[in-house]
Amino acid sequence: MNRFLALAAAIAIFSPAPLLAQTNQAGTVISTGDGDTLRVQVNGKPVTVRLACIDAPEANQAGGKEAATRLSQFLPKNQSVQLRVVGIDPYRRTVAEVFKNGQSVDLQMVHEGRAVVYRQYLSDCATTKDRYLQAEAKAKQRKLAFWSQANPIMPWDFRAGKRGTSNPVPVINWPTTPQPAARTSSCSPAYPGVCIPPGPPDLDCGNISERRFTVIAPDPHRFDGDKDGVGCES
Figure 1 (cartoon, rainbow, N blue to C red):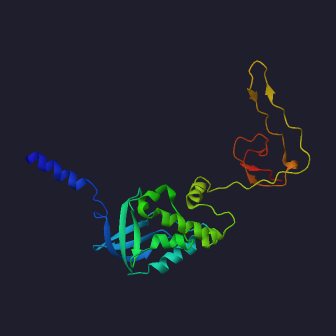
Figure 2: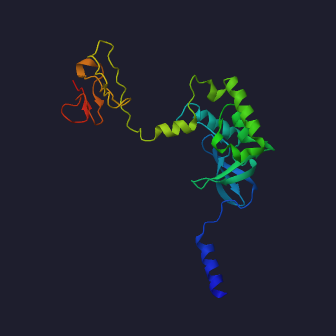
């Protein structure tokens, strides 16, 4: 029995406690971050909260700063809020639907076009998902805020597109003048449907207008003659 108690005590010490043990919590706003995160004081402890069921534009994305400003207007410092906690995300943030005076702030952000419905996690708002989808449809129809863009990029796509592109390669303006004839595909009658695709047309720096652009191997056109990573330097 003593060994069992000792083991239980060890588990209690080394196992991380949940950020919020209860589903519903009351707190006061400490600060807001971007358009879907904030800090809330709950039972004397600061908690980072990620708004459930929605996704706001990133800070460096079109509409991101406006979304952050709008959330700060909804939830100024010391504002009393109620949290309907749905879980903890991989970043140890409490995921919750935030209510102010009984009204869902998450839903209001979607209604005003400051955030979009995060369909991947909409099950966290199962009883009100239709309201979220209707709010988004109306905001999109009225071209509000985020939806005023001609081709808005969803926040999750924006985040995915940013990965691994910290050093973007300049776009090359390929020439409109006639190019060398493209190589034809090679097909063998012995293997129906199997063909070797044609290779790219051979170009040199005289065929393009771009200068001093980053070259990433392989370099089939030999734009980087001196192998210093910069193509068509002159």
